[in-house]
Image (spheres, rainbow, N blue to C red):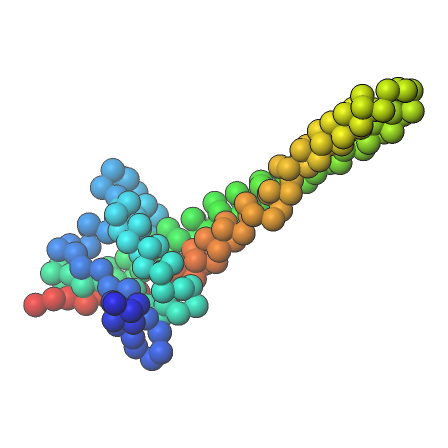
Amino acid sequence: MKKKDWYLVENGKYVIEIRTDSLEQLFDKRDPNPFRSRDLDDDAAEYILSCASEIGPKKVGKIRILTMEGAGEHKIDIISKGLHEFFLYREDITLKKIRAIIYLGLRTLVIGLLALSISIFISYHFSKMIDDEYLKIVLKEGLLLIGWVSMWKPINIFLYEWWPMVDQRNLFQMLSSVKIEIVELK
């Protein structure tokens, strides 16, 4: 089954639909805050995120909440604001994680470059002092290997670790501004 068969398409954008008996089910019952600052229910958040990830951040047009409970205009605004605030908060947290991982990458890069430089320096100078050719090769290659191993973490961070976080941040950013529609089922 194709993605387009699972989701409604309106105006060229996909619609994420959520069915609930009441609007209360969308929010975490353990959170005592009012709707506009409450956490989403874990299952609701996971469902929205997995749908949006599957569809793609630029292809989601709206989130439609189908509910048995009637909702006035004021309640719809509060629910919409609550959903948007939740994803704005998650975007902010993810941005802080990205900054932290980049900072860690820079710190480990400095440490790795220092360790690599020291290992090359020691390798070069100690190899001049040793006459045994086999021992010279083992020492030189061993120290060079240690130096490059010290570069593993920063290389891993800059090549692989932060990209998924950027994708997640973009997803939260899109969801923090997507149109929310609440439809009462009769």
